[in-house]
Amino acid sequence: MKYILLLLFMMFPLSAGAEIFAASEYLSELQKVEKSKRPLSMENLYARGQEVCDELADSLDGMDEREIIRSSNTLRGVNIWTSEPSGAGVNAAFMLALARRNGKKADREFFSIIKDERRPRGGDVYTTPFTDLSGCSALGSGVFVKFYGRWAGFKAKYPESYSDAAQEAMQNIEDALRRASCICGGREKALEELKTFMESFPETPAMEDLAERSVQFRKSAGGITFDCKQSAERDPADE
Image 1 (cartoon, helix red, strand yellow):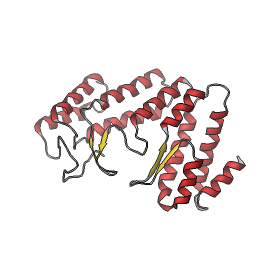
Image 2 (tube, rainbow, N blue to C red):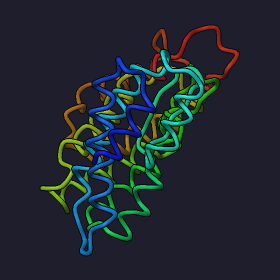
Image 3 (cartoon, one colour):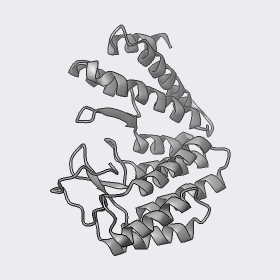
Image 4 (cartoon, rainbow, N blue to C red):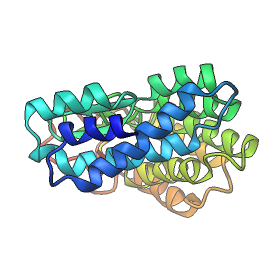
């Protein structure tokens, strides 16, 4: 632990107390999982990883290139990017590989979904990016139905594992559907996936909003654009 703390004091500015604490907790938990001789839950590791990523996201603008490189090298299992917007995220591929070695079944399935759902440098499969700061909703591609189903299946199979993270992931999908206004593809494909989603998940808390969204799509309500391209003059509401 002393060695870890020494590295972290070298890595972060002296004022970055919260970042040093979060990184220390994360690296300590990572070491625990990596050295385990038996399958060990990685849920606490993921939580510590999320904490250090949150702290890094608030600090990156104040770190110079040398500090960022040291952070990337030291914080194994964490992706750091400096393109706009800068940020940090848990490296799902790293975590999945670790789960296959030392984790449990729930860990392997959880990180498999995360790896397929998220992009390494921020963003997810629900938005097709135009630039680092803008994109269009992938509604109509099938990803909303696919991943909501995977998360629902995970929750049913492992109700005691990653419950908050799985619930948040489903909430994020619901919110992305509610906000969808700059749609990458055509109206019919978008309506088809929206209908399939509502039929497949009738208990979703978003049902009333999605039914209203379906009506808006059919009526071509203002603020909704299909075949939304990068050249569109409006800012997408569903980045």
